[in-house]
Image 1: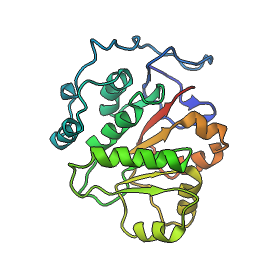
Image 2: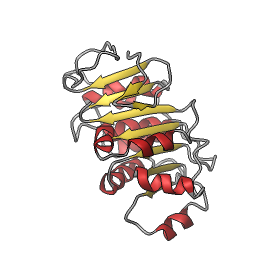
Image 3: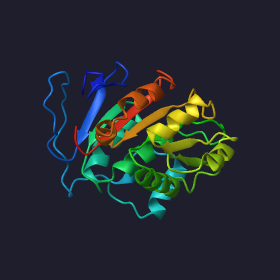
Image 4: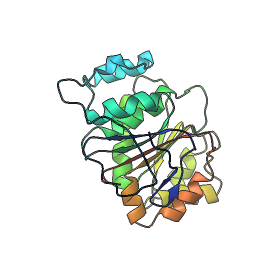
Length: 231
């Protein structure tokens, strides 16, 4: 359980218990954060997705995708994530991080409420596209779920047209998200879940100020999930 609310200069987490999860020894040398967590579960003890308190439609989607046992990072991150806790998670590429936060945000999504309820920030448009694809796969059994990708290097016109009706989930890069916020074409006042995917890369690429401006547009009551390969 982490008590600090800052990560590499990003003050983005609420002053409540924050759960640190990892599938390898954490790369962290600071002293502001303290945590207690067991080592990653072995492949013989990883629980099944059916053990989680998920909505039935999401369980159906997981079964259709043939996801059976959770990966180590999913087994550690999903229980506190589903309880609404803020989570910082470190895991290698291909370890199932995307599915972990996608399951979490989809489990509490209200598809009957047409407002943006989840925002996922990614460092590149290529990663944003991959994340959006994974979310759409898991959301296949949740009727009328709208997932929109907003990234730089793409024409604004089609994005503006798509934003005429608020999407449930937005996945994008910080620069383009901020541009839409400045133009008031994107509203984040109803966001329940904020995900910073590959947060370390975004900071290394100089997105700190953009991220902080975006965070200020989200409710203080939001759940914040920070996923990275390193700290």
